[in-house]
Image (cartoon, rainbow, N blue to C red; front, side):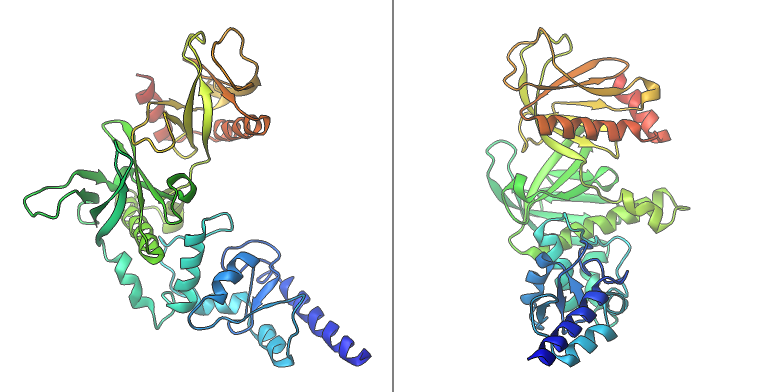
Length: 383
């Protein structure tokens, strides 16, 4: 018994030493630290969440705990001979620069389809690279379920994305005589997954500018692969546009500008510029890249009610926790005051933790240097 226990401990020590190595100490699929699981058929170390998707792969990724399960000698040697770096060279050999690589905080469908694309369909290996043509050809068309602006119902609509004129069109009718309901410029288009907000695990939010106002489309598709294909097709179109607009920039320089998640979203109460108006509950979105705070009546509104620009401290912008005096109607007690050169904004949060989070988020934006485009945006919004 003693020799058996020693053998088990020895193999466990080998695995624990392997998972501490720089290439193995983060999940091979989402990058979360300190993975405790491994695919002993693929030779990768993964986190608990990603291990669940591996168990469901059709080509059979066999998952074992590196701490709790028994390991045969040959499996330990297989892990020693492979690891995350070797797998990356094989399964991520040809990932397009626009393709989104999920991180640990990303939603389930993004992580699941990334894993299936790598190991099941092998889209980024030499034998499966042709499968990328679906979302990288410059033209993508299909149906998505879109939330109606007035009645809130999701209806099936046809969408066409084209690199030729950098537009996304959607149609309410299949009749050739009927033109598109909307033509959206890829130039201002953003896409982000919002499953909780939309109420569907494949919920995708598109945001764009129309006549200087921010508009939202809330979409989903019942098939996870299809909605992620749409997301990456939009990213491919965005990168193609950016390459045209900034021909001297490298792909790595352009990647942060392809699509983005918003820094913070949530409800706060707001009052008017005189701070004597009643507080009203509104949904706020802080876009760190564009340095904008947008607000909507509800989280699923199609058009923003207003927008504020956030510059730097050197230009007179600041944020602080506060206790507003003299305002009426506020139900929440934790205040946030944002100072700009033109106006003081007063908001109220329901919880003290939300107050701290909003102050930290505002401070992060204010601390960022402004770009030439930011100066132009500031001027346009202050007119």
